[in-house]
Length: 230
Image (tube, rainbow, N blue to C red; front, side, top):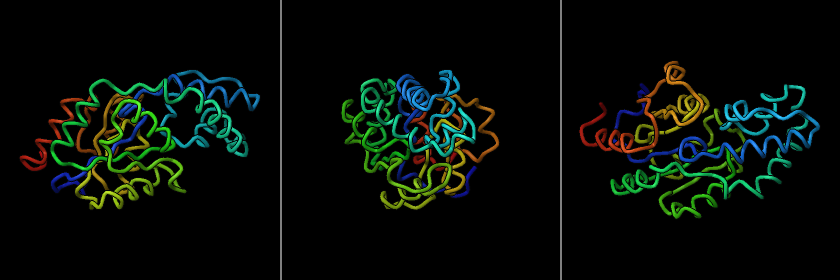
């Protein structure tokens, strides 16, 4: 357990893809659009899903090899070109997320998002679903120089939310998220709506491994503040 997360929770910061929403279908199409544009073979949906949460330059390297790193800017441009056409309307918010967000706000908690996804895309998706107003701050890929698992984006969110490390829980679905929380010395809750197996999170400090951002998750946060950290 992270020693920093021993106080009452004042803010909950979420990853976006595979934590609050399923964007696997449009991301797969956008990645393969970029790979095709570079004259490279397409990758499987499973392989692409395992890279969601990484910066796109790292996605290219994971899927196509280190020798493709010089082509990262072109890959990002191709991905963005296709994403402008299909990303927002084809991303699906997980069904229990709206109720959880309302429940957290009813507890007077501040809410944030930290993602490698561009902030304006997240805002588009949340706005479409009527959820944007629930969030006090969103830190996207365009807001930082050093992306997850570097702690810069999470620390920026804490600064904007005006909370200390020990007052925050960061929620994510991937090892990248777990590494980010550890690097920032922030308490981490893992959810299993991504591609990471439960046992993989055991190598990292965590406050819990839960099925999803659902009512069990909400109750966990509420009880943590009501009774102290379990």
